[in-house]
Length: 120
Image (tube, rainbow, N blue to C red; front, top):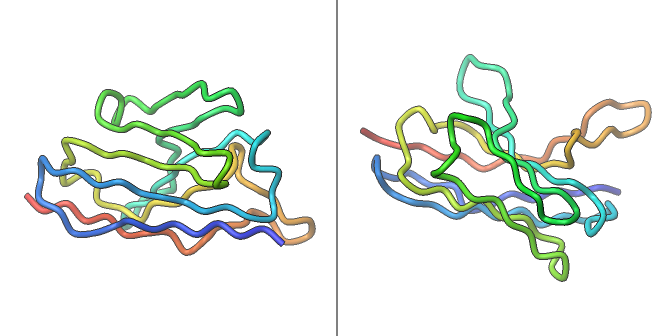
């Protein structure tokens, strides 16, 4: 049974930093491409960072140069270091496989997410 547990979200001032963590279980983590997604109020969920099984990374233009995704296969954990945070980064952040994990007969699986709020 897949489980993705995100943590590390908080209220932070603009210009500040946060480090998000995601502990994964029930998936072949070491060979899975992983991603961080976010969903702001009234907006669709968007993919902001990915890391391949070989640790190749990619970022959306909106976070490039400010966010860093990394992984620890020994701990089945993926991280998102977020620096120079902006109010527009405010969202619920989710980790998932990339593409998002599909539960047969049920659709995409999503964890609870972790709230990041950036005040101006």
